[in-house]
Image 1 (cartoon, rainbow, N blue to C red):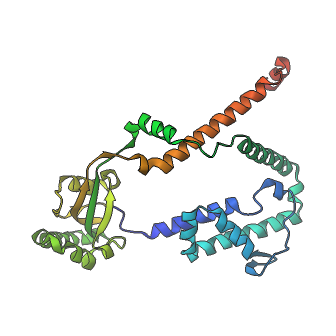
Image 2: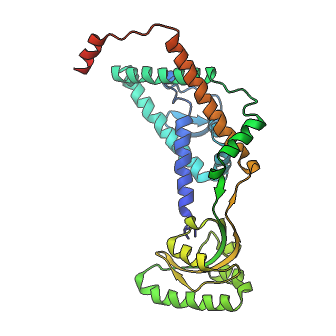
Image 3: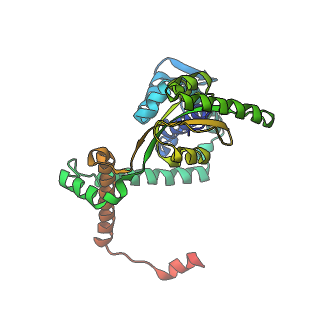
Length: 310
């Protein structure tokens, strides 16, 4: 059963977007980092901090660089977007101070910049010489990969569970909450068709209460252990007794169950295609590097090498 508190999701999204945004922002490329941070801007400021600002083109570039799903979540989460803006402006201000003190010219910074630049050039060049043909994999190759891995495509049984959740906020309230859960269980067992209405009225799980307690299809492994055991004993349409977990009490109804089955090729097509293309690209890159070793004479001076190892 999903945890009753969903507030963590927004915070996690904020941290994710900030991390991804900072990793993809203009200025993280070590090649660009060799130049001092400039204060020229290409449009009106969305936000300012001292001499630094974020303009609309920069914000649009960040959004465009994110995965589509994350981008859509961010568009609907103003708090996460503002958190990224604050982090980016703070970083710009720090870089401004570092530039004023000649930090980019420090030998250790220049060495790290050169090393990072080499890695970027190497990575991008290898991507260019290991391109996978657009028509790979073919339908036959995809079918063969699916057939060869068929044992891996087995999906576990899925359970559609509805719940009425009552939280226990302090030890002194356990007995009272238990009695309330037991009473709700008796009512729901007497009239299973009223379960959704009872969940909407009494459940304290904000993620499911407005859906009549419905938490959707999920494997048993995703349920908390106490709930997992109760659900595994229920028949479709049946309601459980009150079940206690670390968070509180659950009254459960099994509304549907799907048996274990093998996922179809159509269900796996996109994921399998991406995996095969990634594998083929790795093979092409490996062959290219091996070809470099085979086309020139390799010599290693053992004496000089020993000096390093001593």
